Length: 263
Length: 193
Image (cartoon, rainbow over the protein chains, first blue to last red):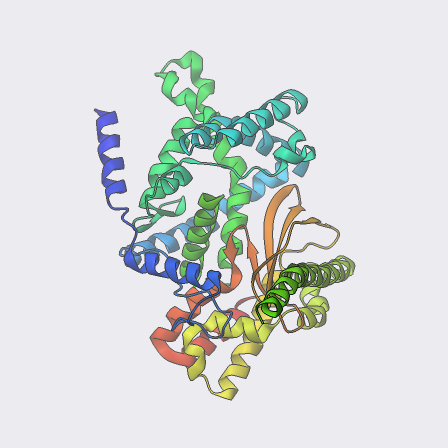
């Protein structure tokens, strides 16, 4: 029953993901500008200005989204920042990096499955090589040895949202999630896919209320905790010097996701 | 006549790729010089807050703040009068310098790897770099333009600083015109330093 509900929700979300016309036009305009044979668009302020129309996502829920955005902002200040600072204080930078490396290395199934789903066979091979290099030579992923190997040092990370983008599914409406922040209909489905594929969460499927396996409940919140400083840094980078933090966070998210999908 | 045209065309074919690579090389050399100077100054600054002041003259020599402001404001720019343009540029300059210098911590030197630069249009070169800073890897692309190969945009992890500000300032302009844009820039500049 739960599965059917999840599937129905995912289908409904994806159905709402038809790319908005304005975004398509903006995309076309920017492609045209890049080709260099442009007549200047109405939005251009000079011959080399190819920024075009600015908003690349539809935001019909803006009022609700803005409310959630400010609620999140408050929660970050009151709860997340102190927790994140505490974590940074307790664990020195070297160990925090090691924890990050282990969790990122363990995310291998997320990356490799999405490489395959996007038909990137060679990239899937390189991801596998990276996983083995870091797991074996990097002591279970503690050290990111792959940084020293040229062909696997800079592999762009693949995820489920990028696969959906590659399949031609647009963002759909922009949605600010409570606690998690900026997202879109498509990216929420992607997020669910990533969550299901990520090994630290596997314990949740097999736990089944068995007290002997209670330790399995530790990795998911540990994963959340270790990624907190990084997430807050990203949030600050998008909002700190902004004129309108809400729009800035929205555009940064959409630009970053669109760029990731291209790689 | 035909052979003359052919000669000119074949010479152009020989010369044009040369011009392209000369442009990218020139822009990249200018960028590398600027980045090295900024890093040296940022590193010798006593505190994070001092960096913004100490790198300001250097950034003003290497960044076209006029172009950045115009494009960040977007289509509304043409309705700004001279005084409003100058005020907006002055405020936006401070905001950009702060945004940029906030990313540095004295004593922490980033490792920068310059990748192959491209020339998407005549007079514009994009220089992609990979930056390793405090254990994390970032993709940072500098957009540089003639005259003088000045920096006109910085794209960090796919997020263009100018496109991002444009979406905010264009929305502000549509609500309240030039005055609203200047007021919102003033508020951002005075918010925290």
